Image (cartoon, rainbow, N blue to C red; front, top):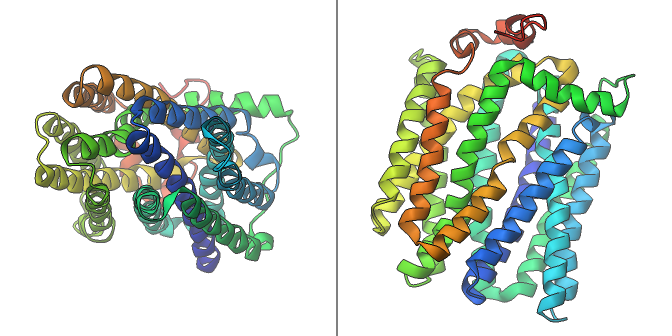
Length: 419
């Protein structure tokens, strides 16, 4: 089953690279070539709004329909987005904007389904005692691939132009579609449900609320993404253009620092902490003490070396936290509602990103870098404060993998709502 896992992970990685390179190139085009950071922010906001809305409306699909059909459909949509932009790149700016909007919408729909669907497949193909290892691999590949892909789109745009960049992105998406076709028949079936689609749709939200830790963590992650996503996609290109002479390689350097931090965390630090029997709860609390500290540090300097250092430690803190929390969630969620809960989780954690992009773009244009960073830091501090009172976090994070399986049902029974 590890072979299927790695094939699914490779497909998800290629899809993520294609999507992130597309949005990265588009963002850099409007920030550098057009001088319109607000337009870049608005396009990214539309992408995340599409991702959130489709994630909500389509959340029951993973528990009702065949997962292999879902991921293959998403692969085809990922190919279509850069192709549309490529065909209209010579037709004028208005046509280009329309194609960009349509491409962003398609990517929003496909991206809303790929990650939660594959996250729902993992417990079906990997034994419970290996879930932490699987999630470690998943977050390492996801994070590094996604971050480097943004830089890939930016460097490609600077070096080979828009059309060849779009051809390159299309090729990556096509490789992903070919890969998923090789494991099409090996993907386990969905459990299926006799209830109506609307019933399943609403049940995903009611279960996420009933499982109180899940609801609290969704809120915390939403606030974190409100800050982290604009930092990577808007703040770093902006500070490069306005403080570091518009040198695109510096964006790559910062993203490389983040990727090295992620890799160090996943391959060295977290496994070492695990061997030392450091509790998951301790890892999570330390990570969330470090995160707001790092964000606040970035508010008061534009020094390139300091930014590299802080971004490196940011990658370490994020991944240590994510492995601890997500390996716990993946086992604690009941199998019968896994796809719905995971999709609703993705909807929740993305919910504030469009507002983060929009507010960051406006703050940069009206007040400048420091005020924008202070706003993002405030959201991280709020998330840290919410984490301190997360329901039954200690119980969940202290359970072994065998006891964690379906633990949400035991810890948050319906008659009490988990209180």
